[in-house]
Amino acid sequence: MNQDKKIIFSGIQPSGNLTLGNYLGAIINWLPLQDEYNCIYSIVDLHALTVRQVPAELRKRTRSLLALYIACGLDPEKCILFVQSHNSAHAELAWILNCFTYMGELNRMTQFKEKAQRHSDNINAGLFTYPVLMAADILLYQTDLVPVGDDQRQHLEITRDIAQRFNNIYGDVFKIPEAYISKVGARIMSLQQPEKKMSKSDENPNAYINLLDPPDVIIRKFKRAVTDSEAVIRYDVDKKPGISNLMNIYSSITGKSFEDIEKEFEGKGYGDFKLAVAEVVAETLKPIQDKHKELMANKDYLDEIMKEGAQRAERLSYKTLRKVYRKVGLVPKVF
Ligand code: TRP
Image 1 (cartoon, rainbow, N blue to C red):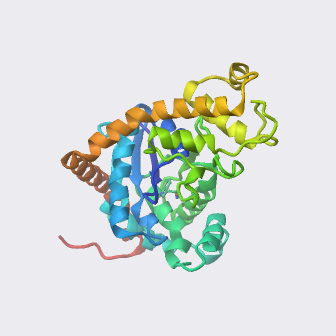
Image 2 (cartoon, rainbow, N blue to C red):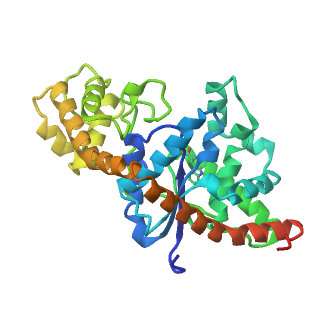
Image 3 (tube, rainbow, N blue to C red):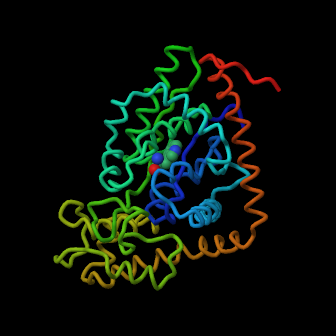
């Protein structure tokens, strides 16, 4: 780690395969950060346990997500890529921070309210304290910046509040992290309900493009994308959310402006446009899919990356955790 560079931390849950939304909205923005910052990207498997998982699938998706991180262009030589549960400091700090977080604060989290509704048969305590584990993720590494989408803003706010509260009592233990707002960053919406963000946990697979979808599936999903009846390709998020979303996807990949796209498809139908979008998406994903396949076949390499990442993460977080233990009055362990 270069001491002069700021630290960036972010994570994605292995709760489903990555979508085009994760790629265009998050990962693509992470790539240029690798040179400028000390980047730490985690696969937050402990967070995924807040909803019931099939164990074998969770294991598989965790490895697959690591392979996807690399296939998308995150370089394990430049950043730390690791599995959250491989560094036990996350769970340990989360416990301590739980004791510095109020029920009332957690009750206000909109994501909790939403998830509690969606998983009403399993409103477990982990779901409730999820933001505290996220705070631990971030604070362990003295993180400066956290690239997060709108849906995670509130969680970053509570992280800052917890850190501030702790520092007020014990002195400067934690760096207070800030949101990293990227200059570009597409917010990709569901193909079926374009008012809603594209999500890997949507029950309807037609709503999202999985990064590993083969070309024929990609084409089929775009063909079925919900649009409107005007039959004009024009950017208007309020009146034409479906078409605007497709334009956003097309623009993010090709770099073309909305005006250029409107001109390119003047007089053409939605069918032509959908096919064009599907084709550029399939083309963009092809090399990622090939690389992913190659990595998944190379178990030793992935194991090595995981081991290396975990060791580096542990080494970095150890200092913060020891300091916290000491500050709150735990007796130092004798080695
Ligand atoms: N809660 C985040 C999400 O669902 C994932 C996450 C966990 C995270 N820990 C984090 C993101 C730390 C940024 C930093 O998207």
